[in-house]
Image (cartoon, rainbow, N blue to C red):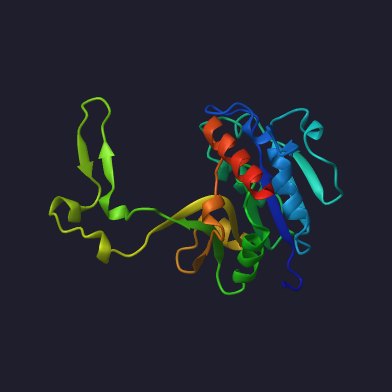
Length: 232
């Protein structure tokens, strides 16, 4: 697919989590959450290297060994809950110049279809970056801010203030799923982001009814429910 271009896949897996403790290493359908993502990536032959970056000391206990997979310790500074995951990715990108294409995948999306990942890499041939996306259920134009202290609400978009919002005539809106981000290394270094300003594309989540991003106990239980339903 990409001649003379090496592809790097990064899986950041911080040990700590505020809402769901050690979520990246919880066992789902017989294996740790992080292993679901790694197993998918290992099936994609064009990926040259997979880097697992974590502050968990005994990570080898949770992840099967494979010659294509490398484990990198995550510094205390980058492991803070206040440190954006992109800071960790950017640090790895800077230290790995031999890879022309860089991608990263969050372990919290274990049900991501492999076909979506393959579409992402293929689409990069015509774009500078590609991101997994999903449709919003409702138009973003009816969004509100709610102030919990004084209970006030205010519209984010002016159209709602003027009662000029009719959802039937509004275009569909989308958001990142968090499943994957793919870009050329040079673009990441230039933009300090996976969102390329002029040539960024999205891959629609192919099975939206099965989408789950595990950040809470209810998310985790929902993922188990989906997997049980698929076996029936």
